[in-house]
Length: 234
Image (tube, rainbow, N blue to C red; front, side):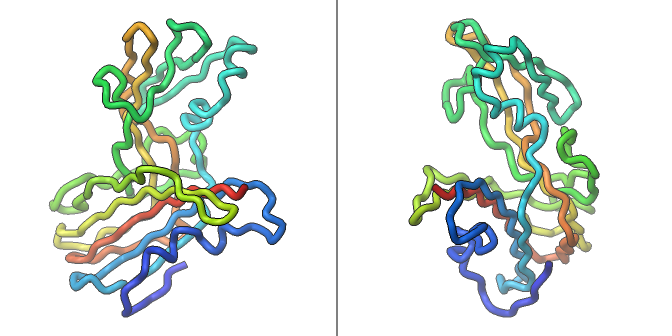
């Protein structure tokens, strides 16, 4: 849904999305919300967009499965990076087993958020997505957007019975033409490490993917900010 507006928009209204409050009984739930704000060259809000996000990828599922599943079943998980290269992931309680150290500034374990990637395509099965269908590259040339550095929170915010955090990123269109955004994904740079300082570099990995229900058009000189809000009610 797109909504036009001539007034500035207070981002604090996005911290706890209204559609993230599922019911009045506050049953425990996890909600992810995607919000997009488009501004003209003067900074005025001209479009607002929000939808619930439902699309963790297979990579995300494998990384979030509890250690006990791996240790009791003996199974591994195939993590596929954005270049379609596969790495086997199988954490255990052994000191020699690979795990994920995040966030960590040690050079051997440098898993981190790369960006919120935007694209102009779409995929019908987000679970199997390992990259965007048609990624929009960083730059000021034809068909490109200028990507800012992602904004990452330093902690989790508690508000009443809800806990949440937001990641965001802004983009500027200096391409000379209109850029259409129809898909969004969260990409991390993933490294597996163990207690003996051995590492396996997986590389850029798509962990979350959404197709927009309505594509966003960003005109030349306009800018857009994308917010992912992840919240849990207690």
